[in-house]
Length: 458
Image 1 (cartoon, helix red, strand yellow):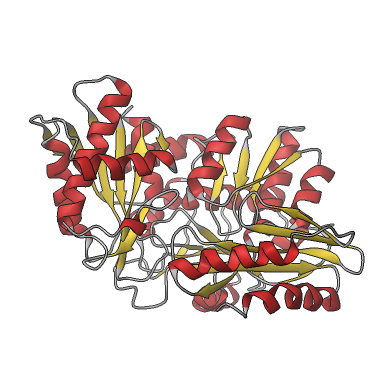
Image 2: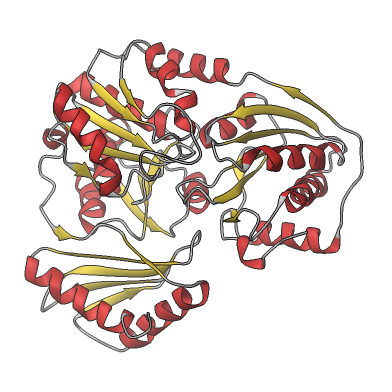
């Protein structure tokens, strides 16, 4: 069995197929998750679901997982090609004991991985490490299970048709990026009265048109062109498994994740004043200040879809999100990240207000900032560099304050106003940095302060 230790990440399992793991590992993962849930719940037989994205390696992995589940005595609902949000939805709709979504998310085509649900929540941290321990010890529970193909799309669409009714028609362009979103968005958006123009709808795990990460501007070129050509109110892009959203406004301008969160926060706080709104450490100070200004309680938390999801649940927050485009609505929805659903909420706001996205963001102070900068490195170096940045700034200073909740976030106030972030990605051998200031000179100063340390160790 091929199983590199580093594939066990903070909030999922991910790596390069046939290099870091193989179908035999997937079988053992199915056995391990079943054992984990049985021991945790005390149930003797489990009901679980399996779904997958469009990657070419999904077939053998799904078959192995199914066999692992069934050899542990589980009944398996086979959902087929679907989005991660639909995998999560199945746990609520069918009241399941757990689920696995096979997906490489926004990673390159050679990657694949596993997003793991126990009951109606995704697991992370120590629970994922426990699965590794179960596999190493072969601590499995035997049984004889069964499987069935199950249509989850019909109840999913009906659920949101009931919620939204008929949205006043607006022009919208969707970019599926040849990912799993193509399996559902036309049917979903048509059901609520929208007739979107759809780019790259056919799922294709080779991603022939562009990389499936809509939070990187170069991947939105075709979406921008289509929005401008059609005069659409908005363009919406999805990543490979449709749990991350990217947005361009009617002028073709890309919105950062925290700008989109600001727009949503204002809408949520109109009906739910005084509530907590959760964001991750990569989000702008502008967003946190805006939440406060509009009567909310801003909460900064660690990056990671499972971590933010859990924080929203614990804090009973109606809304939260990440700079990386994971958007979580507990208000009216289940509290997990569903990009097609977030897109519908955005269309609903645009249709109901008759305003453009820039008008909906009126009053948000301008800022000079970078997007999320992802620097390719190694698994070892990404951690080393963050530690070196901490060492460099871990001294008393009136010019800045430190937040070490996830990597290091340095808030500058004195010579310049702004902030910097350096953290190790939990999904790839990547160092993530981001910088912001209220002046262009301040941005350059802050970026130089941090990158002078980073560059020494790259």
